[in-house]
Length: 220
Image (cartoon, rainbow, N blue to C red; front, side, top):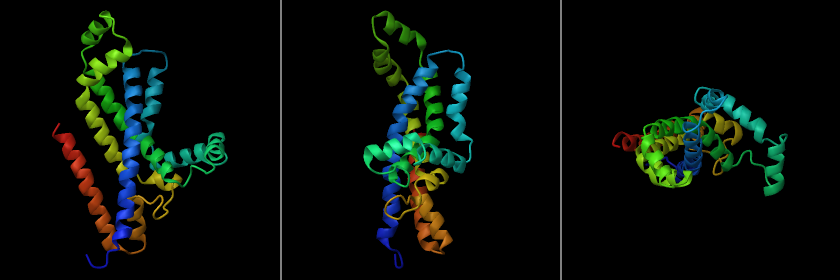
């Protein structure tokens, strides 16, 4: 297409896919651990903990970004530890974009997995335990196979949510072309600078990817 800088177009798309793949893989593992652990236990304060885990679903992305900026910035002990350990700050890197995507995607992944684990027949799990299976074996051979549809849906929804993350990413990763610029931030900057054709191409790319992911969910 005339007037399109394909290198400039592809860079945010590839980075968005990279960030989403890493974030969705991490949140998938964390989601399994949290959803399985909390669905099988009852303890004092469980409701408060689950409410806290779901907060990113309703908080404005800029609020999430601000909290992450405070927690991961140079003035925090964790931010200083990261900078000392890796000889570079975490803020304004693509890993910061991964963290932002992970946090905003987690509630959706967690809730979907929680519903999936709740649908598994407890009698089958108890039967496996009575036969001598440990908790890890019950999870691996009974719970996960029976809940695989919900787990697959959770992964796809997590990937799609991470792909569209904007506010928190802009706060802690910035909008550095070729380094931290994802498709949502690229669209914002393209509209601000009047590059509407490029903005439409980026919009089309993220719509197509998201549509394919949601189609995969609806066909399960």
